[in-house]
Length: 404
Image (cartoon, rainbow, N blue to C red):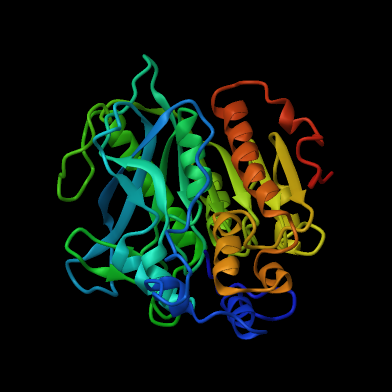
């Protein structure tokens, strides 16, 4: 469930859209679903929200990394401090039974995130992921292709877990990044980070892009057998030396999609890039031709309506694709499509209230789209597998349009 300060076509922020949905009509009090059921209600206590299971053949493991970029002093934190990031590695795993599954977000960060979204009393219902914390890496004799992920503004690194664990279940290592001062996350010493005021700590797409490039450096360290974690915490068995720095891609949602484009223009290590409805708005604007594959999954920020997106498209000289799911909103490409229908049922939202948040695209179809198309794109360009799904419209996904 993602909130972002980007403004939609009607001038309302994403957080405002959610607030309007909560405020309109009659809804159940949140406490009625987040707390224990009353003895006289006859209603069972609410259980956790759930995420769809990944479809790949492999089990999934995950581990957090605390990363400090000592090339970038942090003037906000003061002298002696440097850019500080939390990152999470997701990967195909083995022998996962004795390893617990990871929550969607750390508990403290989840409470802060949901409170800011007006859903604080749902914190007890936070979903679990398919990732087993610290499970050993499944080794197949070949190193794992790597994809890094950049979240949207005022969001968090878990907001596209459906996509991330899907890729990991199909044999990718995926590294998600929590961008300092524009995210909800938790550090190893217990600090809870929330997005800072934009005037106090402006975090621009260029800052995100620099974070992504630093994470690529850390991937190279892992590939070389070195542990980049600032506290040198123990890593899962088999992770060191298992990543392939010659096959790295990147994707991001909203501002993270813009950052993906900026990082790819600046860094040839990124062999393929994917933007999930990124507005491509930067100062100065994105410039320079890009000769590597790039894909747009558009919703509200389209080439037809946004000059910045059209200008970026005109600089793509390699394989380029632009698809649009009919009925998708800006929040549609992500875990929102899996989680908000459950929230709507718990809180008694009307169908219109739900559509005001996630659009009119069928949620089941939306989840299948975000599982299938990013996987096909990275399979084709990092694994060099022919993916017919990318050739044109598919009867399996009738909502998906290929934009010329």
